[in-house]
Amino acid sequence: MPEPVLLRHVREPDQADIHGYERRGGYTGLRRALRELSPEQVTDLVDRAQLRGRGGAGFPTGRKWKFVPKDAPVKYLVVNADEGEPGTFKDRTLLEGDPHLLVEGIALAAYANGVRTAYVYMRREFYQARRQLEKAIAQAYERGYLGQGILGTDFSLDVYVHPGAGAYIAGEETALLESLEGKRAMPRLKPPYFPAVMGLYNKPTVLNNVETLCCVPWIIREGPEWWLEQGPPQLYSVSGHVNSPQVVEAPLGTTARELIERAGGMRGGRRVKAFYPGGTSSRPLPARHLDVPLRHEELAKLGSMLGSAAVIVMDETTDMVKVIARVCEFYREESCGKCTPCREGTVWVTQILDRILHGRGRPEDLDLLASLARNMTGTCFCPLGESVPPSLRAGLEDFRDEFEAYIRAAREPVQMPVRLHLGAPAPGG
Amino acid sequence: MLSEGAKREIGALRARYPVAQSALLPALLRVQEELGWVPPEAMAEVGRLLDLPVEVVAEVASFYSLIFTEPVGRHVVQVCTNVSCLLSGAEAVRERVERELGVRAGQTTPDRRVTLLAVECLAACDQAPCMLVDERRYGPLTPEAAARLVRELD
Ligand SMILES: Cc1cc2nc3c(=O)[nH]c(=O)nc-3n(C[C@H](O)[C@H](O)[C@H](O)COP(=O)(O)O)c2cc1C
Ligand code: SF4
Ligand code: FES
Image 1: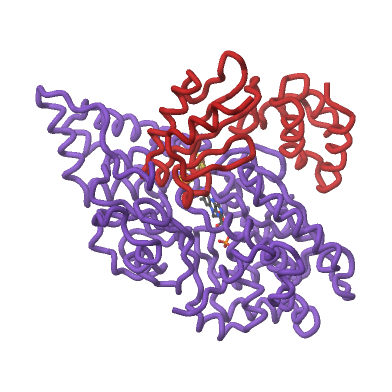
Image 2: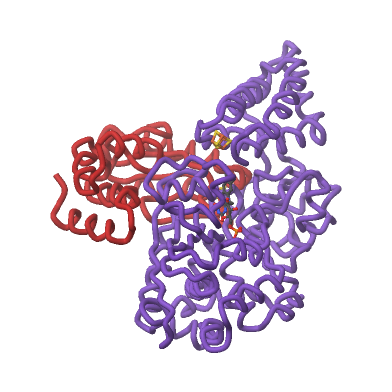
């Protein structure tokens, strides 16, 4: 197993301080870029490292940067630090433990794209992360890594942290831009509103996830070949029924079985029933897929996705009906209401799941859920609504017996127990 | 209604953006830090400071769950109830805290000490089950530890 890269220094107590960060090689990537590389060369290195976005969509970062028109007089960089996908906590880990890594990544991305103003859109609940990042930004200004004439060149950059206010949909890139403009976080139509060409204030905008930008200093410092030899490094947020839930850095394509091992194994030595490979928007997979490499291509073949690489592990005691109902409820709560299939579909789906859970399910409910899943596929305005069918499909195809058991019990005169066991409590819980 | 300090800060926030409306969320949150919530008169004042009609301010404010357009308690407790926390006993934590406070999630204690919210994933599933007490995060919690934390709030 190669030495971790992205997490290498997050636990050093002085890593969030600029002296600690510099002592461990920090800002050498930025120095190198400003001394030796043109903006285009920085983008080329990122491209050659085959870096793909870590926010959820997995879009190649170098290619995204090349869409940004070179000659536009005003462009923006926006960092997505909204981290709302259930099960995901790697951006927070980076922000709290190594905030200068993000500041250096921002500076490099801004240099590569000819940007002078950057906004970090950060969810409100990240109080600690925000303090860490704001301190890092202030230190970087003092040391001349941000501000006017950075390191004696004619490159200038201002960075601001902008708070969100409690809306998962604001993590979707066009909704984020609406929110940053002081409006309701509702997605924009693509095209024409591709951020790279028509983004913040309708100006070309580079929009990247925190982890994506944290990869960039390493790529510039050590080169794309080195980066690829390291895996490439990928952060997996591993949580649920494992002994020590944590962010695991592992080569892209590591299996769930290995990740569970790295997270201390299963609680109580129980067996795995299922896992979400990429947050609750991905299709959960039954245990027979524990040895599938968690990579974009393999997961797509299974009708799932790598998404934000949030691996939520569920053991054999888990009530999948309850989990899936909770997941659908999340999307109902967070639907922005702009389009009908999502706004109404999430309400219907959760109503049916709720009645199944409460012993009032009907035999025809499973067909109803299947048809709702079909009707919500390819019809929603943005991917939030499309996040419901994968869980439903898994429920109906891979865990159908659990749904049927609820419905059978409902038709029998015996009352269902009201409280259902949902897996083992936390250590000590 | 707003302090001079808050007005000054909202002015400074405005200068960070080429368009004043961008300062709206940060401004509302600044108001909330001072008053605990955003009453209608404060919305009007923010509107004046940012040259926005009060209707726009109200419409935007109502979209976001962490802009409080009704009074809240002196403390806001947010218990995560999303999947990773649920798998680790979040229901028991939430029920125990509800019993301790004598209110359900979404309500405020009659003495206005605590508002309890059941919230979605806090991006801290490594600390599941977890909760935020004002600006501090706690986890992994036992129901008893959670009850003690809310009991000790003044
Ligand atoms: C409903 C929804 C929520 C999202 N939430 C986030 C988020 O919290 N953080 C994030 O980085 N990307 C999120 N995304 C993905 C963004 O739209 C976007 O693809 C990403 O930030 C681009 O950065 P990247 O290319 O570096 O991954 C979300 C997408 C959707 C549809
Ligand atoms: S799919 Fe849902 S979240 Fe997305 S635009 Fe439609 S209603 Fe809004
Ligand atoms: S599910 Fe509770 S913090 Fe993520």
